[in-house]
Image (cartoon, rainbow, N blue to C red):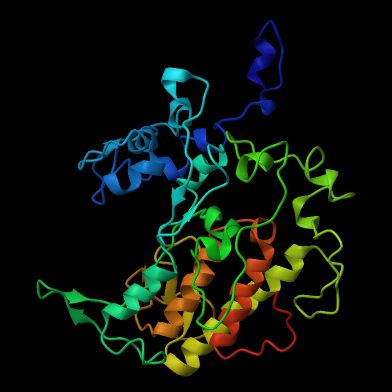
Length: 365
C-alpha cells in the first residue's frame, strides 16, 4: 500500500529515493567499509591512509597543509559540502592548481580548474612505477619475466611475497591523462598518447564539464549529443569522422565502446591462457571479491574453493603481474572508451602482445 494515500497532499512514494546520489551516498561501501573491525566489533573510523577520499574531512585537511591524524577520522555519511567547497568562502571551491599522481607525475586541467579537485581522489593508488618497483625488489625477477617469483625475506626476517598490485577504484584521471599520468603499466619500447584532447564542455575542462560534481551523472541529450549527433546513450558515441576499424571486426562505424571492449575480453583470455600454459596454474577473475585473482584449476572460470574460501592466486610471474594489473585497473574504471579511448586501445593491444597473443588484426593508435 502506498502510505502517502493517507496524507492530505498525495504523492507517489515510488518517486522517492532511499539513498543520496554519488558523493553523498552514505550507504555506499565507499563510506560504510569502516563501520566494523575484522572481528565484527564496531569501528566507525576511517584509517588515515584512506581518509583523504573516504571521509568528508580528509581532503580539506590535506589541502590546508595539515596531516590526517594517525588514528584516522570518524566515518561519515558520505562527503560533505565543505569537502570540496571552502567553508570560509562558500560557495567557492578549494583551489587546486596541479595534482601529483602515484607515478610521481604532475598533471593539471589548468590553473584553478574545478576538475583538479576531482583528480585528488580519482587517480588510483598505483602506477607503472609501482609495478616496476615491485619487480625490482625481487632479485632476478626483471630478467626472468616468465618465472614464478618466490618470496624473499624483508629487513625484519619476515617473508615478503611477490603479489598482485591493486590500483584501486575509479582512477579515471589516470585514463584521461594517459602517459602524462602513467597510471597503467606501459611497455618498454612503446609510445603512448597523453591527455585526452576532448574540448571543454560548458566552459569547463575535464570532469565537471560533462559530469555533475554532486552525483556524477551526465546529460546525453543536452551535452553529448551537441557534437555526437543522434546519440541517446554514451555507449553510442564514436569519434567524429573516425573511420578506423580498431578491433579488426570489419565494422568501422560501430560505437567506440565496441572497438575497445572486445580487446579487454581478449586480454582476459590471454591472461588465462598464459597462466595455464606458462605458469601451470589456472587463473580466474572476480571483480567483486578482493584480491580479485583466484586459482582456477579446472578451467571453469570460477575461483576454486577450499574450506569455504576462494583460493587466492599466488604464483605470479612479472609478465603476468603486469597484465593482471592493467586488466583489473581497466575493470575498475568505467567509460574508458570516452575518457581516453586511444590510450585504452594502446594499453590493451600491448598487454595482449606481451602475453603472446596475436594482434595482427588490430590497429594500434
